[in-house]
Image 1 (tube, rainbow, N blue to C red):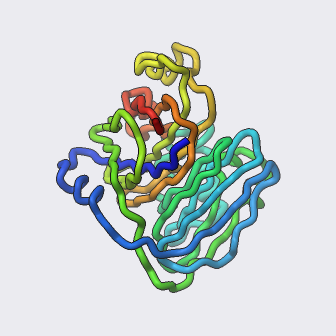
Image 2 (image 1 turned 45 degrees about the vertical axis):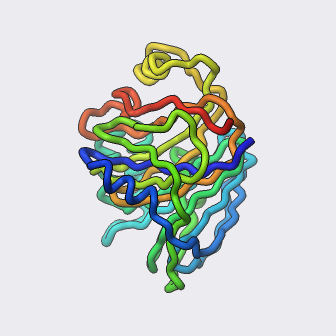
Length: 276
């Protein structure tokens, strides 16, 4: 297995030059590491962290996996309102709920894990945040599972370097055929979006993926997602995981709030190979 760091640039009508500038950025990696173990009953997290680059290293014993994300509520938005809107967005009202969530909070990303532990590095500024396992949405005790986190002034620091870029232009992932090395995740689109890697059966085609996301074909996946959970426009993250080598689908499970259709059903997906 090869260690890799994946980043996705989500961009709408953005020239390639700025993307290349992002990819070749070389900032020293400074910051702190927060280890979080997620179980069936939830997770614990520190109540205080320092501003700057923070790496959340996540593992889970929950067979359903974990989708741990960091969010910052906008002024005047209560935790109760945000969680109610999040439940709507991930349940019966993906369009109206999704629009409300985008207004409720700044989503800084986070990490989805299945069998393999993974880490994500994000930059945070001082303020009050929430850590949410999006897998818990819909549970009656969701509010009790959310962990408040206060970010206090710190030394700052940036993400690590990025060697590869996966670009989204007009709802498409533009990805290298093989993923290895380090790549940054930057959402330059006007929409909240995510980037998930899911192992697929050998021989899986884009047509197979399209049929699944349109509801006309079987699931081609052989395991759960590892990736970056939703990022607000302008946010970035770096994903680090030691996934088994093989064929993967790079997908998003986010619904386009303009059309009511999943982005992946409309072509925002790519087949890649991880490792050798």
